[in-house]
Structures are given as structure tokens and as C-alpha cells.
Length: 169
Image (cartoon, rainbow, N blue to C red):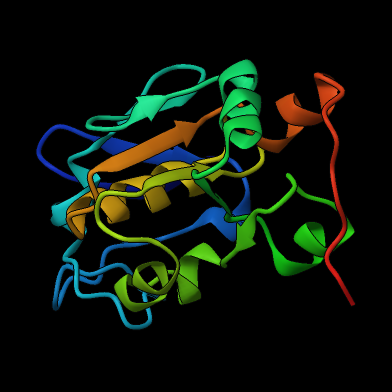
């Protein structure tokens, strides 16, 4: 069953998994579960477009696995994995940072790892997962300028045969 994420004047976001449910708080127009966020729901939902098969985030550069790999090889880009901590610990794109989207992604956290002009790449479970789209939209709302949306995410990285690493214990 599909769940509605939220709506704005031109967008409705829908997800298929129960852990993706995010509902606008009618009292303050902020997403429930957004610990520490200073963005109203409409401040970032306006960046997200849901098509039949995936998401796009206005103001970001949407990249594929080849471009993501080139960015890793070149260095300098900050990769942010918004999958769960347990999935990240099993394996992830080398050098990536991990942050839980719903409760943990705050302006303070991202400001600790990136400056407003740094290249930041968000990824998650692939093009049907909205988490990296939401994370990229929040970063835009906080004024970060060079946001990349790796919509195909971790599954495409693995299919391409690129190296992965496990979290250090």
C-alpha cells in the first residue's frame, strides 16, 4: 500500500514502504520526526518532483554510477549515505558518511562535514527510495550550493562492480 509523504501546492510524495512515512505536522507545517530541523515542510518539499519511476530534486545535479565513481576517484566530494546504520555498517561507498534521514539529518550535522560550497552527494536504496531526495532537498533549503543526487544509489554502485567498504568496528 502506498503512503503519502506530504503535499505542497504542486507536489505529492508517495512511498511504498512503511518506514518511509513522513507526514506534515498540521500545527507547525514541519515533518514529524524532524529532530533539530529548522526547515518548514514547504521550504524543501518544493524541490522534489516524483515521476512514475523515480524522484528528481530541482537545484541538484542528478548523477549516475559512472559519474559518482569519477567523483570518488577525483576526491573532494562528500558522499552521504542516508540508509540505516546497520545497512551502512555492512557495506557502503568508500569514504561515505552515514546519517539517518528522519531523526538525524540536521543543518548542524551537515555543516560539520561540509561547507556551503562543497560538493555533497546524497544516496540511498535507489531511484524509488525517497530518502536521498529528501536529504538533498533539505541541504538546498539550508543554502548548500553544490548538491548532487545519486538517484540510482547504492544498488547501482554494486551492480557496476565498484569497490565497497564496511564500517570500521
